[in-house]
Amino acid sequence: MAPPLGVLIIEDNPADFLLGERHLKKSGLLAECSQVSDLMGLRAALAARRWDVVLSDFALPGLEFEECLGAILEAQPDVPIILVSGSIGEERAIELFRLGVWDFVIKDNLIRLVPVIRRSLRDAEDRKARRLAERALIESEERLRLTLEAADVLAWEWDPATDAFFESGPVAALFGRLERHRHATLQAFLDDIHAVDRASVGAKFRSAAAGASDSCRTEFRIALPDGGVRWAMVAGSLLNRGPEAGTRLLGILRDVTEHHEALSNLTVAKEHAEAASIAKSQFLATMSHELRTPLNPIIGYSDFLRMTEQDPKRRENLDIICETGQTLLRLIQDILDLSLIEAGKVTVDISNLDLADELGQITTLFRAEARRRGLELSVSIAPTAPRQLRGDPGLLRQVLVNLVGNALKFTPEGQVSVAVELAAAESGATCVLVFHVSDTGIGIRPENQQRIFEIFEQEDNSLTRKFGGTGLGLAICRRLVALLGGRIWLDSAVGAGSRFSFTASFDVLSEPGGD
Image (cartoon, rainbow, N blue to C red; front, side, top):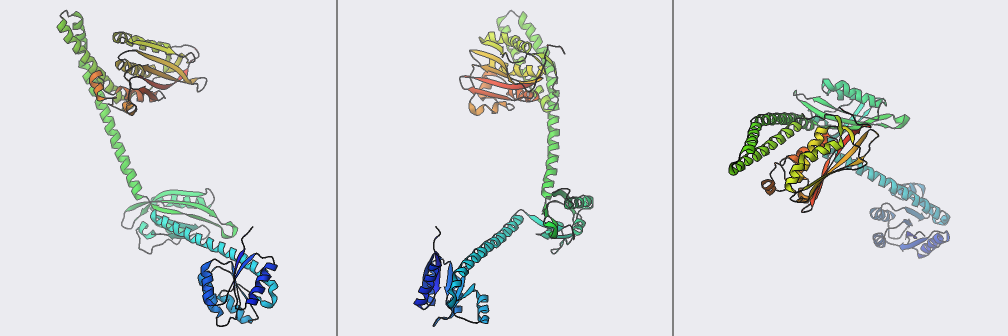
């Protein structure tokens, strides 16, 4: 149920107040009426609450109606004011309407009072809604203005029918012109654009206006009076206002010179960085070859002397030479591999391969090392994984060699295993395999599990002294796995071992075949 209306009645005669109150109730209008008879009481009543309607007599002893009217409009300007009085004359009534009275009811014809109150209340709601809409529009326009100023953006509007062009914001500053410079037409706007870009910008505007697209967006150069050039971006959307108003193109204009300069500087810096990276990689590749050439005979002759030397002390010294030489050779090979990858010289060489044969080669390569360390080395292939594949066996072998070599190096006791399973069959002719290299070694702390895939990073610097290595192997693996169309990740716990996993994509061969 709706709350009763708050009706303030300005009346010096208590009988007339009661008569009016009874008439409202008799007419079915739920109202809570209050009487005032002087200006002080009126001000107090207006300050005490919000009234829905004010009914006022015109002739009040010692009180000017205009004074009452002013107090009401000052305190509650939106409240409907209905004059309930005897005849006051047409000219006087018109004057009171002009001053703020909403309607007029003669006391001898109170039957009109409730319909007039209801109509006034509806008018009050309409006025309130209209006022709120106007206020919201003003606030919206102010927010838009402040937003455009904060973003250093100009707003524009173009009428294709008349070629009239309207702008807001510091247009003159953008175009390097005098303070009052404005473009009255689109053609005037285009005349200030660099000659190279003028035709294309005009075509964008006219194409959007013709309905070829709902919007236009382009960047262009502004030819400044001092001979300089400034870049600007214009973007607009088509607004269809109906058959009478026609269509308009509205949008924004902003200075993007700094963006273009930064982009140009970034491009130059990128080119320099790429050239430096290529030069570095080429230098490393050349140096790796040059260092490896004399190192191979050193290792070969040392190994030959070790096999023929009978003196234990000399044999021990030769063992150190061979082991150190092999370590240096592995480092050079890793540097060469990494430099070739970063220089983009490593390509995927597709050929047929037998999965079981590839894993068998890994077992053969590391069987002696595993036996020497007292570790068990095992290989398994899931029944669902296809054996006959087409991919790059060299890259696959290099990844597995790195991972298995690391697993053996960091596993004091227990076992190292290589397992392969089918991750996904993308179609009848392709598949994704996941390879797991697991060990029961020292494990890796969680905070280091991402870092070890970066160049020259290891789980702990103390491990370098204890186990050797350069921190390049896993960085190389990550890049090679990407060339195989996969990704690499790690599951590990300190003291419980590690499992390195990676995926690779292959074509599936229905029958074994050769290259």
